[in-house]
Amino acid sequence: QVQLVESGGGLVQPGGSLRLSCAASGTISSISYMGWYRQAPGKERELVADITSGGSTTYIDSVKGRFTVSRDNAKNTIYLQMNSLKPEDTAVYYCNAKGLTWSYRSFEVWGQGTLVTVSS
Image 1 (tube, helix red, strand yellow):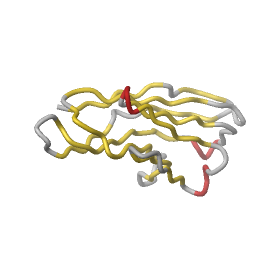
Image 2 (cartoon, rainbow, N blue to C red):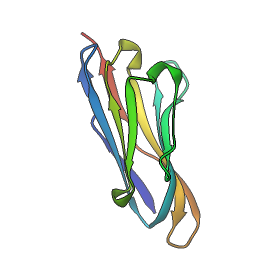
Image 3 (cartoon, rainbow, N blue to C red):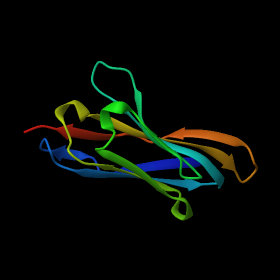
């Protein structure tokens, strides 16, 4: 089994910063993809940023220049540094990972979600 544990959410004022972390554990042989998604009340879940094992990244337009995704392959951990936060960034943030288990079966797992609230 593979599990993701997220941390780092909370309440922050507009213009502030937060750093999210997501650590994968379990019977992991390799992780090819990790990403951060978010879901605001009444809206669909959307991709925020992702990163491959080789370090290639993508971002949605609304967070470019403000958010930075990074990854520690040795720790199977992905981070999301969020700066200049805006009220519209308020959402539950989910981590996603895809890869292979020790038995070389593919997996895709989601974290439990962490709430980010941007408000004065």
